[in-house]
Length: 224
Image (cartoon, rainbow, N blue to C red; front, side, top):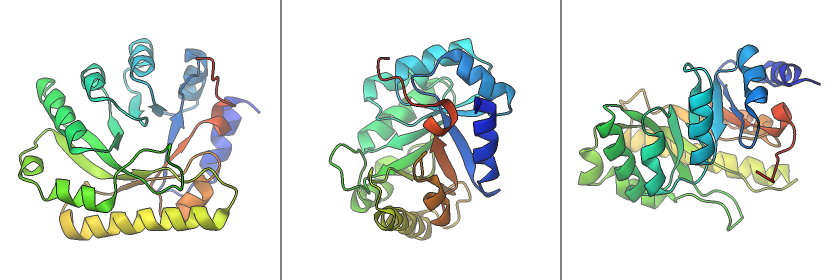
């Protein structure tokens, strides 16, 4: 099947309330252009250099999501254009994003990434760390970041029950934070969870954003 066929198949399986981020990391511009011509506008990358290069070469109306672990010294390169940073996992990083967004006269949408998997290689904070940030004076003074919701990556396992539990836990974190800190904030509305192998489970558990790569573009090129 072609990239267009793959896209159409996935979109037909998504609820109207779920947005698709096409994960284009390691993929050539031609693949992204093919998806773009088919109507896809949101793409996800996990490396800053690759993201900036693609942004410079592709249409301006693409919404770029940073979905990988982000180093503080790299924020300045994507702050002028990135649509959303899905991988905020510390107050230090959030402060830098706010600083760089201010320099560019922007408000950058951010998701807090939570550690929900049974794998030490995954990134993310816990609920208590997030609560400490939201309760801090430093966060209260930030004017150039918009906390839009939460993100998480499940364990890479064939155990569907475990994946359900992990996504259920993330939905509970979202609900608790929404109730405690963002009850009157309509912008806190995104629950980004689910990838190629588990996006169907994710949407059953309440996902509003899924991040799908290999089902659209084929297997990743690990040589890049």
